[in-house]
Each structure stands twice: as structure tokens, then as C-alpha cells.
Length: 416
Ligand code: MEV
Image 1 (cartoon, rainbow, N blue to C red):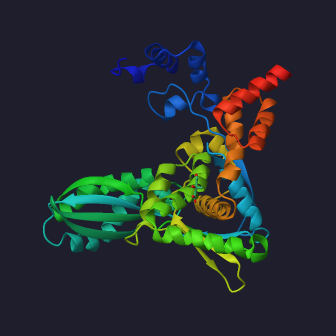
Image 2: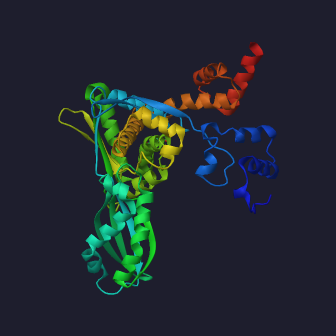
Image 3: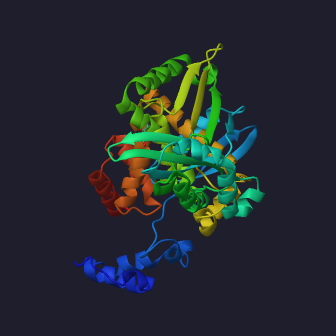
């Protein structure tokens, strides 16, 4: 094995596959599987570097969502069983009223780090707000025409081990984009001006994923008559554990991100940006906490809500290059990135509720294991006709393992 593959990036995909095949002893059929790149056939090689294939994920539709009085079908791309079913079920239990959602203006923060600045850097920068606005807005006249562009400035100062750090925040309205390109370009273009103004030197010029000014919010009421009082109490108990215990809270928020990420991935969005923003926001109060909130209202119904940064775009990047993302955006019927963010927030809330409800009721494994069983049946080599039979038997026996799936499959084939 030699990982020094100089010039690898210049080769056509076929040749790259052939090199990896030889180095890693892949079979002919494995190499052929790699070459089957689906609808990204001509595109993958232009999207990232050193491409040898694509990775597919199941794309499902979460049903039953009513958001702001509108029914919406939500595409979700995820490898984990139960997530799409759980979101759909939670949304069903909230019908007919469904979810109400809203969002802030799409303001992203761009950061410029200045070191070794002379006195009064903060005051000097804030005084030049007008000039800074003119300079950065010149970089993206289209965004400005659409109502976007620089909206405000902030300056933070820190004493660090390497001396004083002045951090300038450009607050940029990025409209329907995720915003990284526009914001990073603006940060880079204004850095020389800030250096001259403050006598300092700039180091980092980059977007922040802690998008505190671009929050999506959603709320939903699950009726007492639908859930049952015991289940509501169980959910409130479960929620309380996430509030007081960071180990539980990480998993609680992970369940939310199951839904959010699945929508991000399905629509070609940067799910790592969503993740980074979500977890950093969960800790902004100085202590890691849940992104959702639950309470009982006067009627004894369960009110669930969520508030989190939502860095989603519907223009630019893979949202446009990936044909599947173009289709999923069409299925969603969203006109603005803010709507997409609101939908993702509702799905996150739905998944979080569904997980707590399942755990408070019958434990998460019951539902999970059904889908796990059919995955095991497929892994054991069952054909689409055989999968339900193998799955059913494993569930009946309560033995959901790889080995049992293989045995049942062999038995079935011997018999028929
Ligand atoms: C699994 O992907 C997600 C859950 O662990 C979330 C939770 O525990 O709330 C079920």
C-alpha cells in the first residue's frame, strides 16, 4: 500500500478506481459498484476532489406534516431505520392543527481576527461602519439588490495568551443562501481596510457557524386525549433528565439532529454547519442544554417547542448541482431558505418528541428492532420477496441477530 498518489487528482475517475482497485485488492465487481455513480455520474468529479464514486443513502418522505396551516411532504435522507417513521408519526399525532413555525432574518456572522492593534481599535472600527458597509456590499451587488448585504457590525475584544485579539463581526443578510461564500468573501475583502484602520494584522477571516441571529422556531401541541396523561408525564420526566444531565442532553439533541440533518442532506445542505450551530447554541447559556422545550398547558396538553440556529440555503452549492436536491426542494415547495429552516426545525422537534414518547411508553428498541430485523435480513442476502418472511420470523422468535437471519434464510430456501 502506498498512499503517496501524486497526480491522483488529475486522473479520470476510471483510472483512479483502477489504482484503488489494485492497491486495495478490490474485486472486479467491487470496482464496478464504485463506478455506478447514479445521477451524480458526470457531476461528482466536479463537486469534490479525488472522486472514485458516490455514497448513496435512502431517501424517504415524512408524511403528515402540517406547518403554518400548510400540508408538506418532507424528504429525509438518512441511513438509520425508524427516523422517518417516527417523524411521520409525531406529525400525525399533531394533526389537524400541526406545527407553527417562524424564523429570524437570514443574518450570518462573518469574523475577522485582528492582532497587535493600536489603541481604541473598537471605537475606530465602529465609527467607520458606513465605509465598511460600502466596501463589503460592493463585493456582492446581487445580494444587495435582493435586500441582503451588510446590516450591522459588532466588535469583541479578548485578552489571550498571544495578546489582545480584536474580533470584528460582519452581520450579513444572506437571503436564500447558506451564506458561507458571500460572508467569507466580504471578510477577506474588508480585512486590509481594518488592518490599516487599527494598525493591526488580520489572521482569520471566516463565517461563524454559531448563527445566533438566524434562528428557526417551531411549536406544536399534542393533545392530552391523543397522547394520554401518563405518556405526557413520562415525556416531561424524560425531558427533565435532558435539562439536568449533559450525558442525556447530548443524546436528546442527537435525536433532534436525526431529523434536521436528514432534511439538510436530502436538500443538499451542509449538515455539519447545522450540527456545529446547533450544539454551540445549546451551550450558549454557559451550560449545555436541550434545543427543545416541553410543558403542559392549562388543558393538560403537551406543548413542545424548538429554537435553534438554522443555516440552510436553497440557492448555490449542492442545492443546485445535485439533481436529487433540486427534486427534494421541489417536493417541499419552499420559496425561501427560511421556510426550509422552519421545516427542518419542525422535523427535529417531531423526532425528539417521538423518541421520548417511544422511550417513555414501550422503550425505543421495539420499533427500532423491526427495521433492524429487515436490515439484517437484507444483509444475510434475502431477496425483496424473502425479507418480510425472514423479518417476521425473527420478530416472532425475539431473536434479531445476523446469525439467525442467515439460518432462517437457509431454512426457507431449503423448504421452498
Ligand atoms: C437515536 O438515533 C436517537 C435517540 O437516541 C434519541 C433520544 O434518545 O432521544 C433515540
